[in-house]
Image (cartoon, rainbow, N blue to C red):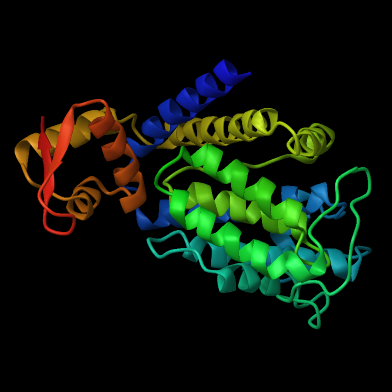
Length: 315
């Protein structure tokens, strides 16, 4: 299974580099891509939890503000609330550290129309997960465990592969289960936050895969590799879908691997630092730092000087 995961991660990297080759994207293309993600993730994430709206109905409710005859009001609120939460998550895909207040805000945006008294507030009662033999966090340990989760995330964001980071964020959050409702949707939003902040496409889990998804998540209590492989497969599916759409509308670009782009840029700009590299190559700082670490470990480049004033050189 370990070899399978590594192969999946390599495929994720290969496809993502192809997608990076289409950058920079125009403003209208970026907006349409965000809307595509917004509706797709809102529909699938809600459907996994039993929401009755179809994808087209979700689009009408979210984008046009219309109601759908015969549908429960809660289902409509889940759609608009999830879309609002996604917008906030999308705005967090920047270079600031994740904060506990961000998680509370995501839940508040999702849940405030359903029950404002519980929106963005940790649960006050114990809960049990049907179909699971494992307990979630006791009420008195929720805040501390979320704080530790946020610290773990910020300490590892530019150190481990984005897909592993995303799967771990999902798993660790949902095992805490901090809210009275909406924990699965929050876990998937946080998973995709980790991907987007690291210049990756989101992972969409269709309703048809609900049984497999729940099964590998349950197994993740003792072995999380199958769950990580499952998430990697969902990233690959989304990447492939977007590449197909791009190939039909945008000319195929010449693709140079990011490692080679970094080496060429450092060669031509000796002493350049990570923020300047991120600016030149139009990648997030954490993505650049992750690739720089790999090149340094492989003995291709080296950092010279003190932390804030030094830069990178070809070794």
